[in-house]
Length: 96
Image (cartoon, rainbow, N blue to C red; front, side):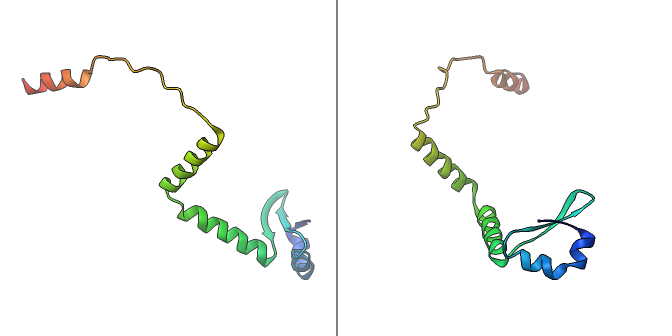
């Protein structure tokens, strides 16, 4: 349900009671500024945040590899071709 800040202040006990059924959204001039949720929803959100924050880059790549294997995705790389290495030319001119 949507509440203005003034309504939420006046009917705070209603806001808290209804939060057990669905999140209660509090707006200030049509901009969402807060939400009142039940404790279970809050705990689930906190657990999700902790899991995301503790996930390493290696874990993310492992998950990506599993998804690629499940989907049977193949990366087609173009054939490699030899090209002039400009870095070696810079080294030759510096060493002289």
